[in-house]
Image 1 (cartoon, helix red, strand yellow):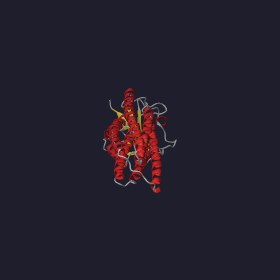
Image 2 (image 1 turned 180 degrees about the horizontal axis):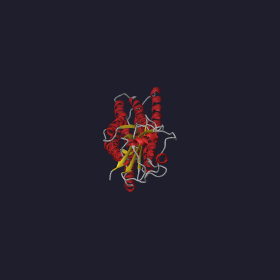
Image 3 (image 1 turned 90 degrees about the vertical axis):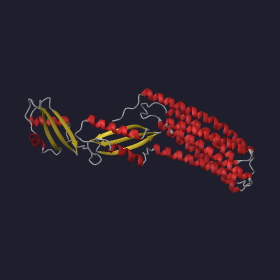
Image 4 (image 1 turned 45 degrees about the vertical axis):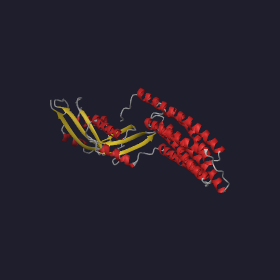
Length: 387
């Protein structure tokens, strides 16, 4: 059973709005990255700063990642369809994985190149003062686009946009390193420029690894944290009518959470009451975690982890049991009703009769005597309704 989702047209409008917001902020960031990348690469080359040159290459990786984001956001915000009934958010996860892999590859290559330069001991030239100006402009610009992009990512609940925001902030961090190393080089510690280039590359690798690892965990359906899982179980257990909770499973799809939970309720209640109890659990869980998208709940009369459901063909269904009673007791009145409880691999039977029924006179003891020798028999009660 599942809580109904929002109307299809409303969800489609939300997806379009989210896609538009993501596209706008990404294009703005891409233009900024391209401008800063050109400035830093030219400045690093002309004014003897290896650190600024590497920082410029980092900015161009931002441009490449922005293209990835634009393509992925267009696909991941499509409406669910027959092939992807849960939606296309995993495309966003895959895009984040690609983005992280790009960062790792670029960062590792830059780190290796500058480590070799540092170990070779080749003479370094002192960076010129325009390097400071370029680095300061980069810090200001990248910090601004980080805050703007992260705000949009949180608003539309997109891990990919948030990841891209942090990619921008790494550029701001690396520009700070360029500022410090350039000042140090101007004071006589020329080797600081190459060391800074290695540190910047290490920052790129670290952020790329984080994105990659988080995406891998999502793609293999890693569940919620133990604390969140414990909290959701507590919410269910504190809901009136829930006797136990088992098989609470979770997975992520983009920023959304999907849940499956089995709720144990009293076996004698009606199907509709069991469903109502489940809906109360759903409401409580959604209030606790706002990014839960779907909750599928299964109503159990007992914990079927401890008592597996019987598969023995000798366990009769409703029609087979009615035929057996008819064979042993005669034709039951048309208005009679049977209520069956399948518990612990036995059948517990209730028979409801009208007071003026025209069929055979039945008592609880009589039916119990007839069914007592069957291994699947649990208990029986005969109820006669008074007019």
